[in-house]
Image (tube, rainbow, N blue to C red; front, side, top):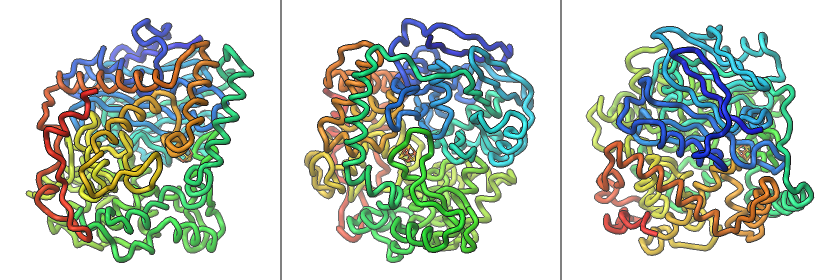
Length: 577
Ligand code: SF4
């Protein structure tokens, strides 16, 4: 019953095919990376006709397993020049899975200036001229909902994607039809724009949950997995109460909250942008504000609240920790109301908040505007949608801003901005930033767990010992989790409660009639990383690309006075297993 849909933007032909043998048993990041590695020339222009854009729900999609509806997006990245997988919550992943579609492959490209939208339903796929070109995500989705209805889910790009800016994201609608969930990293939205694809409309009618080889065994394992998530203090209490912004005060205390473009590790106004403050303000203002909101059906961790303005009117979703950090401490801005507006603007025009927040901080370092100039940053973000030269520069991300304004301290690896954890004070995540095939990406091996949170063991974040092994093991585990369609936040429970991983493997076995062991999860993760590393090598990457910018080795970070001191030869050993 599972199919791959190929959409040729050059010929406008859409075809359903059985899953080719080369991709049998793959899902999520496993499928996107295998397909990109096999079918895309690593040396091709990412914004040309030879790149492919792949959408894939995970192996546990289309089931009642909690938090299993995420969707992976893969391609050659126009930001890094290497392989890319970015994943998102929202409804489309679950809808595609229930339609039996395990992958959509967008190939070729439309004639210059022509825009199309893809209508997907049960056993049907059709390209039609786009009715929403020139609109940002919120207006585009509102217009699409009028035409196609509230039961569909929507995948769109904003103007940033249309302009092919290299920080452009792809938006996925949540349960309330807001385009607020994004495959953010690596410029995947620019690839969709280059193809001439403005939107995908997914009609889930006649879709159904996947058949299970062993239904009772699946239900029993799903129950154990649910219990592990609800019992764990981070998954069951911290995330639903404070969102991911619970990390602001924690990282500040640890001295690893990058502030003023990675100049120091603490922000004196951290309390005003913390998860605790956002929770209180949401409750106090009431109105349309909500604490604990699920971005997709089946999510039981509900990290995503809804942010109200002073009158209780909705601004947008609760900004995530990385967004608050990027535009808050990193830019010296301490007003949560304005940060919520930045998040909404980024969701609307369709850009990655980490990449663009870090780009604004680099613009501040260059003197384009002052640190702490919240209104100036707002004006700058609005310029992205207006398509001004400065807006386009910021919308192309941190490295582009650094080059344009001659800045030395540009926090990128493989051209992609470092996220919200200073690698000098959280050294395990520094190893991940340097070595993951994705470019700087905390989610690729979230060493913050053992470095800071004491989850899955404890490794001193300020020392170099143990960081290579920690990052290696987490990169392997994460590649596997990204293949299942599970939200990465399940990892907190998986690292602390041994039965959680066993339950995941039991669900895979019960769904597909397999007899996998937990060791097979490691084998799968290694195989995905190997595929991705090989693609990057063919694209021209060398060991020199697995390094942090030199200033992280030269400049000591307050308050712990630490530098990034992990030897190059050790970084080069991460993938020696
Ligand atoms: S935990 Fe948060 S990011 Fe994960 S699926 Fe739920 S709402 Fe979405």
